Amino acid sequence: QSTGGWLSITAPTELQVFEGDRLLGTTRVNPLMLPTGTHTLRLSSESAGVDLTRVVSIEGGRTAQLQVSLPPGTLSANAVPWASVSIDGRDVGETPLGGLELSPGTHDIAFTHPQLGQRRQQVTVRSGAATRVSVDLRR
Image (cartoon, rainbow, N blue to C red):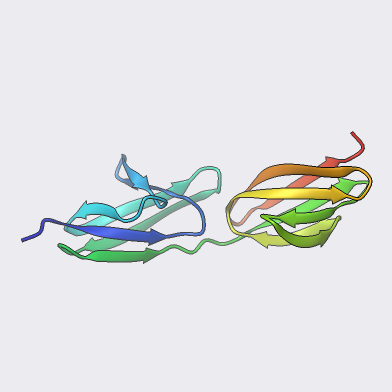
């Protein structure tokens, strides 16, 4: 008879998984092994502005699935004088850009101007919050 099972968590950004004050791991480490029974887990990411509680039931020898969806954040981007913008390798248009919905977490932004070159920046988008980023390509 098995005294444990597993929990596989799918989330759009890496979250820490706690039971009480004990860190069990992160959503990047899948699956997590847990004793059988009901568990109240806290899923959090300070940088992404996420702090959720979920109750899961673990059956011996089985893998429970937990799908976590998070409200997106928004990003506004600007550049002086102007730039083409790509986020995580995907072209999104030219500055100024506003209200771009992004999943919570860290994103790689590239600002490109034909004469002034490229400037890259990492930005952390928080769930349900607005983030602004701007660069001066003349410097």
